Image 1 (tube, rainbow, N blue to C red):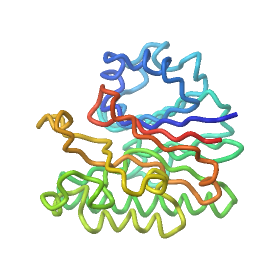
Image 2 (image 1 turned 90 degrees about the vertical axis):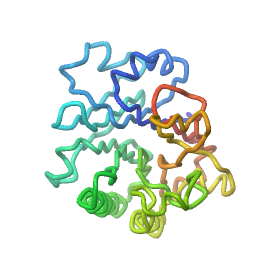
Image 3 (image 1 turned 120 degrees about the vertical axis):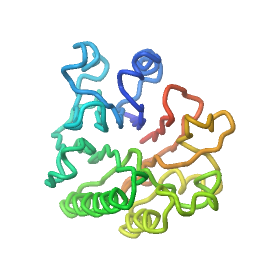
Length: 256
């Protein structure tokens, strides 16, 4: 059966619920949805906010710090197993990863760190990129086809943000951050949206403080990277930039 996977940094799961997330999920009806920056602990949710009848396979990895970071994956497809650790306390405490394994692929739902609080966080971000790539490599060495989706917090090329020159020294577009995306691609992983639409300018994030979305002054920092064995099975890759409710919009892939 065809499979649709959606990824969305919701900038607060409870905020998203107040903005119609449940209704949107029913209407859109993906097979799997990966959420980032959920900013919630499970004890703060009602039972009907934790699990959906349409997506009974629900996995959560909240950050230890309240109101911060965290990821969740909801799936209607049976999950073989789920992992929420990079085996590094400094990363695992921030709730940035869920790995769900399916018969045909292994899905990484990732909220990459933001480096805009200073050099220490840039270094943390780069170390996270490196450690995650090691883990991805371990899965691939065992024969897994992989999909790595989420908020990468990095625009890869100049066409991936509206104002590249003005942001050349801003975390999110620093040379060393962009080089990390290159490093991922050098292992054979493919940015499937850019592969299918090499010249298309479309963004996934807009600064809310400056009202950038109304002017479409944005960044493409949310991606699906897929291993080579899955490329021919991706029928389409989409940026759902008409969906409101967060400073990011959802992204999607359709697998045949």
